[in-house]
Image (cartoon, rainbow over all chains, first blue to last red; front, side, top):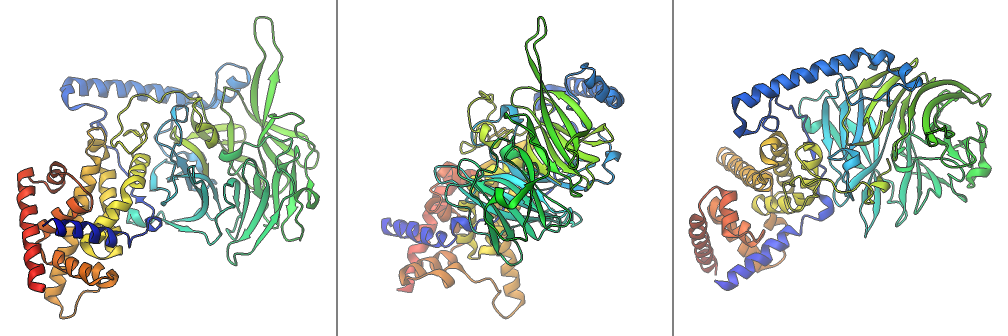
Length: 418
Length: 192
């Protein structure tokens, strides 16, 4: 009998090993509907009285949210007057956001399981496909094995194609790029998202992806990679697999680039798909990807004045697709006043690439430690922008003509792409 | 916030919320079912797919069964996360899914004259004669006995856990295991 047991163990193991670890497909989850008054909200032992108390407190919450929503229109001005702390309240509207007109209907958010401020080491981010106006979850995709987390996301302009960078945690760090195609109208939730590895090889051993930008038609992918900092910029033709690399200098010398979270923030394509804009050497530069060459700084030209002499004064610099404006977050320091220490604040500005001068300050908010805005999407002219703040609001919204409208959001979103 | 920054401890402790599974990070709670189920999938998908593969002998069906099991977990996450029942639930779902596939195949076999498309794992994969005989013998056992063998000798689960997954008492597991090994010995002797 003993020998049969041993043989069984061996046979099962050999058959099981025919399924390689890297062959595990990604998990694709359906949209989940939370039951109103779920078990979490009312513990089983709580009884009916507590359930009614929960209903009553929910009603109070709704009233508070409605009150807050009613005053949203004036929030921006109160900010500029220094009245409130942030324009990004945690409240998300229950009804679809009408301001979402003209903005892509779906986005992919890299989401960890808790609010960012509470995230611990090696948080694993899944890719959650959501509707912009309602916040409804269309699908959730976990990183495929052997990868532990998604770190970056970028989108084509078709609102259906996204590229994600998946990373394996140390001691064997590894990065691989995946294309995610969404089909929101499909009935079966498991068929609403399809994740496939790109035929692009793994990045250099130990290197990380620092920037990712998919061209508007989804044919070309720009990847900034390096071990400790972005050291080279590659443009990959996704149809043919051909690659072109530029390097020779650090991409970010003297400029403020937000790094991992800024998937849309510091490499951007212009509408003609021939030009790539990036932040480097303290200014925003453009590179014609159709031309030969291998030296990033020599082959590119600046389209803005030197934005910063000291880090970190500028963040999330994005060239609008029409190449006429830059949208960027500028950090402003105010001197100490009697009884007050020096303070810093951030403002989102749209500036002209022709004059190099700010055309409009879109919003203004105080800086808290570890917090900043991300510019997640801009319209062709840069007049409509989607921005997110991390702490304390952990929210995102649409800025249109200086009017900010929050969109449904969750606190654990690292970054997102439209 | 940069992900790199989050790998430091600057944000301090993350609270004492109980993780549904010891293999998951402590921050995984029922607050975010998508990420929590995703993390559970990361940790357990491979052994579960292999379990289903041993039972079904077909990779595609095995992956489908596991995918469905995690989708089921995702829908019922609120009821399972905090009670630590998530992993047993998924294992049970995988076994139930395998039974459904096998039942469906049996129906197809009765209805059509030719063999169903799914090839058995041993027919395709086995290299040694001994292993082939053994797996053939395992396939001839009743479903419950086969499941008990796989849970014990592939997943190395104790009787209590097997009982939980199969929805029977531990004493039933022991008797089922005994009958399975007896039956296996008989089948192998007949083959010789």
